[in-house]
Length: 360
Image (cartoon, rainbow, N blue to C red):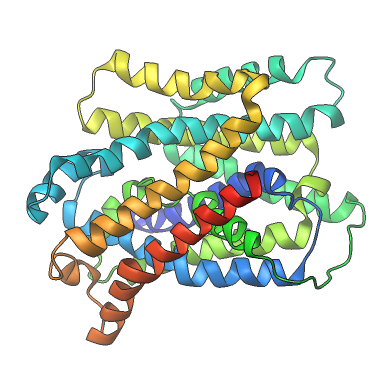
């Protein structure tokens, strides 16, 4: 009973920690570390409801149907849907993206943190050390890693609230088209959705619970709380540099561990596993292309979510996930299916166009 209770809380706690740290890592690249625009934060919260909630349900429903991790599951899911094996490429893209995302988090947070520490080292050297620590820590048991990351986030928020400096007051600005791209990136990519992480960490729970809501809703609420916490504390301007960097190392170790576990379930050669994991991190040690890598990270994260929404919404038969979702009434299932088939793909395509527009 105690193990079941612990397992039930691991996914929401992981969702809060990962979302908070990924937001802290990606937000500065979108210019959001200090500016408190009420209109943008409302847009972000709306996108959390319209986009991240359906994707959260999608992951849990696929976990209930497949009963294995994402990379391994796509083989059976594509056979069930009677579609081309090329659709398995979504899971492969996602698993390759995980270490790439992990490197981006560490790289961005290192660049933010090092100038405010007493370390007499170049940020690239600090980043390399942080990567080695994360790789080593990835062998620690997952509950311990999640707990360490959770304690790091909570401690950072407490210290920021006590010793932080004043930020710009909340204010209204005109809503711009480009802001939809940033809001969608933060709602999906910065929530760690589309990567099969919550799918992977919830496998025990979904086999014991009848309705997907029992697992999906706590995860989504935890992600929402991370957004609210970031908005309230203005992370990049407030959180002590060392605390933020240490917490990021724990979170990245967790990401690496989960990616490695997916490779193991798929029985990928060990050398290939570590080649992908290490290269995904090492590419961020090239400062000359840091800006390009950040842009690629944002766009790839959106493409992965788009791929899953199309696969589930249009490739899988309408009955495939009905039992896995187990909604109380048919209307809720139909609303979710419309969101996955229509709203999510269109919103993500618009977001990709909006983000590319910012880059041009």
